[in-house]
Amino acid sequence: MKCLVTAIGSMSAEVIITRLALLPGVEVIGCNMHPAAWTPASRLVQRFHEVPSAKEEAAYLARLLQICQGEQISHVIALTDPEVDVLSIYHEKFAALGVVLCIPPRTAVQTARDKLEVYRRFAKHPRIRPIATTDFREARFMAFSGPLLAKPRYGRSSEGQVHISDAVALQFWGERLGGQDYVVQPLHTGNVMVVDVVRHPDGHSAAMTRQELLRTTNGAGMVVRMQPGHICDVLAQEVADTLGMHGCINVEFLMVNDAPLLMDINPRFSAGVVFSIMAGCDMVANHLRCFSDKNLEPCSAAPNSVYARGFVEHSLQD
Image (cartoon, rainbow, N blue to C red; front, top):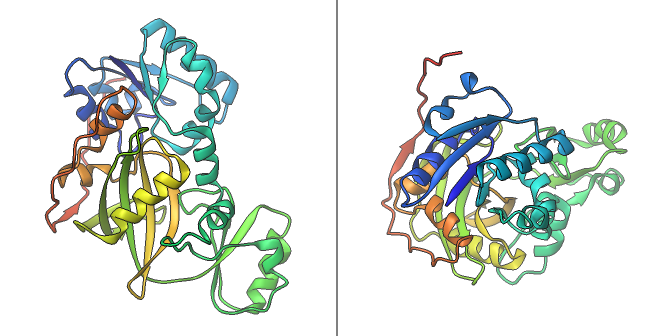
């Protein structure tokens, strides 16, 4: 099996490549939009290819297909949102070359990306309670009911979020964002719970929840506490089932008054997937099993441990 891992400059790339390389019979090829000399994870792959940004869709797609043919790739694993968004459209094009895209189906990706559609999909779910979400163009004409959070309807990583503290601010931002695809939500406070969940096409799944004690402004966990057996394990599995997800994704909940509110669904590996691996759930190996007709391996019981992310500097040759 020969895997092409894209965007190996991402935060989770090194651990994902390392885990893949330890699997029997797996060879790992890597690519990134920056040159190898700027990509520390390039030292971990058999071969490295520089590719265009996924935002340049046509050029990016053509280059990946070229690499897949030249390297005789069997599986492609995409690590970032823009790549998943683009590649999810082209499952059949890669399949024609005998290449499996290890990402969820297109419809599941599209729903996960749409914050308003996520709310609509789960608003009447018997167990999953999503954060109330309204189109900003409608909300600006409603009576102000408390602090709000406006965010791009199809946004990611907290980009473009605006805190609205009062009715004056609502009017101010309404005039500036009213013509854009924004949604508005009540501004809740609580503990952020991130769940790495892997779902096999046969319906079996495994999940691991962690509480984010310290995270970056774009939502990457820096210090986390593992929460074995948390209710969010089951809820995340239900989210994956409802949307028909395949492979490893991550689901975020906000604990408000001890009740979990569905906050975000990311149809890719989380930046903190290493924490689940450290706690006893090999999400990377299980992800590949979802796309190679192999059964999932169960997660061992995670200790109630606290993990912290560190950074290591590398000297790279030009």
